Image (cartoon, rainbow, N blue to C red; front, side, top):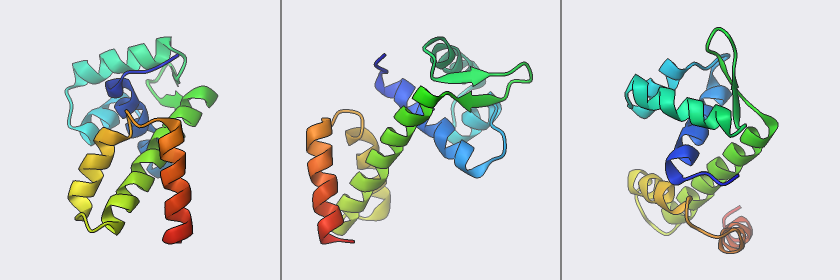
Length: 123
């Protein structure tokens, strides 16, 4: 199932939080994204319905296998695109903001070509 940009942003945020925290709840997502609790609650419900996350009885969020794979893909796009833009001389903050926009619309073909290029050039 395909997500819209906002759903991808929530999924990526949950992924990042899961990398740094032992447990993640909706309040953590709200604070991380600087969004309201009702907005996060709605998004969490949609992600749960679509099978990307599981929320236990105590409100702890876990990515499903499918959710983790998609979130990892989005996060990788963000980090690689940020790296490319900073390599080209864009300041870190602007590069991260622009990468955040581009990561949701770039095709797999274009992204993989850019990723392969930067891995050969920079690494």
